[in-house]
Length: 285
Image 1 (cartoon, rainbow, N blue to C red):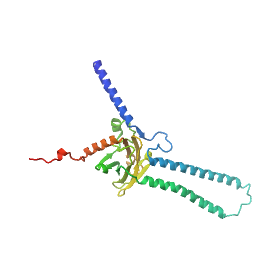
Image 2 (cartoon, rainbow, N blue to C red):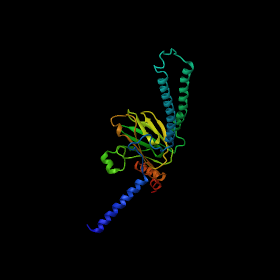
Image 3 (cartoon, helix red, strand yellow):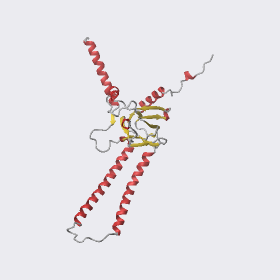
Image 4 (tube, helix red, strand yellow):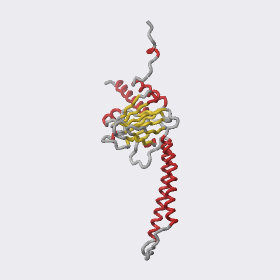
């Protein structure tokens, strides 16, 4: 093999490598679990921002309650030790104390319920959604329908390890799929979920703050608005059968232009594009 041909081949390899690196940079793998990760994943949506905020409030409350109970236990051990109380007290009721330990927990629960219900209603209904995606859980894969774009469907199945290494080696193991759910960034999208068959499934993406149980014969609604482009992953969170652990959820977030081109391609593949003027014009004979 001549030196010129070797250099040409090397040049092609370098260009292909740089192109692949450019594509990887344009679509980074963002929402993926990490080893030794503790706590919540990073937040990528407004809903998850509020979930983290509520979590922080509850963490403060439960810490104060735990410290208060600890102080009471230590005081009870010290104050009512047998050496200090050779004659046990015969007091069995204390009206003010019983009212206090009934009313105060109720007030704490009400204080927790108010922001909890606000978050529940905030995450439940989409306001001014750009479009809807219908998520259907099957045994054992996902189907995504785009009813506002001609109702074409995308079937998403986990890639076997050998196929993942061939097709998508940079994707995480056990989470890579053959086709992702594709959405535009910075867009409010209504997610409507149901299931086909006899099993319930759980469409859950932790970084989005969404966990929707999809049930046969019912529709559950939520919404997402992802800020940045990239790949995001989740898994079915219901024990739906023997292949439950093989139902990953993969979402690819792209720019609006890329999303429009992807929709056009999918509609063409599904035969949903309208006929052109030339094709639909009557022939005059």
